[in-house]
Image 1 (cartoon, one colour):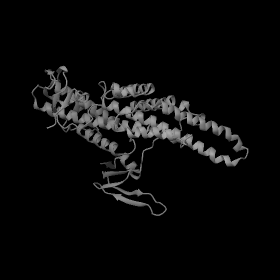
Image 2 (image 1 turned 60 degrees about the vertical axis):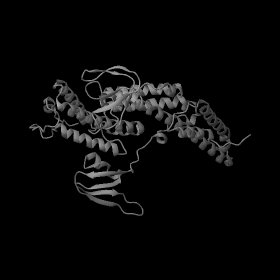
Image 3 (image 1 turned 120 degrees about the vertical axis):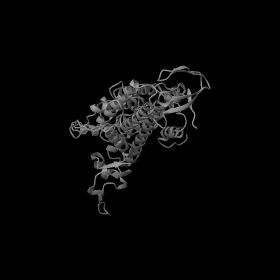
Image 4 (image 1 turned 135 degrees about the vertical axis):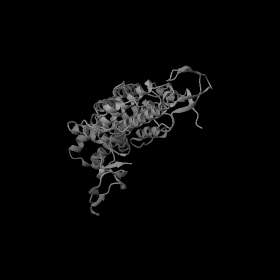
Amino acid sequence: TTVRMLAEKALDLVRELHRSLDGTMPPYNEDKIRQVLEEMQTLFDQNKDKAHFAAEGQTNLLSAIQLRHAAIRRNKRCLLAYLYNRLEQIKKMRWEFSSVLPSDIKYNMCEQEVQWFNKYNRLLANYMRSLGESGGLDLTQDMKPPKTLYVLVRCLVDHGEFETQDGTTILLKKNSQHYLMRAECEHLIRQGILEHIIQ
Amino acid sequence: MGEELNVSDILQGGNGVNEEDDDDDDEEAMTAPEVLQKLEEAWMNEKFSPELLPVKSNLVECMLAQINAMETNIENAKKADLRISIHRMEIDRIRFVVSSYLRHRLAKIEKFTSHVLQEEEKRRDTDAPLLSDAELEFAKGYEANLKSHLASTALRHMPTNAATFNDKEMAVLPDLNSYVFLRVNETTENVLVEEATVDVGEEIMDFEKGDQHIMMYKPISSLVESGAVSLI
């Protein structure tokens, strides 16, 4: 049998997430989480066995008990950090995309994470709706300081007709270019339908 | 919160934001440009402060109402009026400042949730609550959502002595010793800049209006709240 360091699998989880921070979030590692929880239970049971011996005066057991206790706490800390930081990644998606997650990201989330995300959406939506007197303020818009009123955009896919604020209708045909108000087409730029041409 | 913002006169006007009203109401009334300036200060303070500051709901509500009024004015104006573009830009700018201010607050509420809720408990019945009613509801819901997620994915499956939330272990606290840039708005004397340690005595300075400093946030946090200094 190979000798493994205690809480090594928990550390693997943290490393796996840390490495992926600037790329895509890896799939929910249900398997490894279960192994970490099993290790915690094993350590706890071992301690329980030895605890009454230690209480009876066999003080040489105390260090082993403390070591296992420390390992349990380290496992807990790594596991919670892994779960918490995944939620942070998922939350970033809401602000970057929209309340509908791209399916390839959703594929890597577990059921509870999807539920957490839906609940977060509801909390955020309720909060934003309460701002001001006329239906709320969408805080996921206006993420950058406005530099110009109008922007030059190129249409990347056929998107059909689009009615601008002053009533004119334009046809968003692939590769067509338009000069539109930044505020009214910001969401189309974020979705990838329009491309902001920077001169 | 004091009824210090009386902007009903400005909102009835048809010509946009930049008129200086001669208010002969009570002298605490502010014009819309003054409110915007105060909001920009609150926005900068919130951006650079390591901790969540008391909410400036009046300023937010006022500017949101202002945006509505301006949009109505635009709709009623002649189509080709040059001022429309200028008003539109101003609306975009104001909306950005308001949104950014609220976003910075939301980020801190999400990061320091349990700490913020504890602090708010202490302040609830004073006239300087940390959170607006809507923010409080959001914070409570956010905390519950997080706790229930961690419980169902992990804590529930842990041995009994590890299966609970230990707020002391798990709460994230703001680093009040981070450094900030500040500008002095009101001359203040005998500011305790650094507390006495074993090696060094306490350091006390006078702040002159217009001075700019870079120093640790903690000793001047009360000056930020009172408006005597602004973070930049």
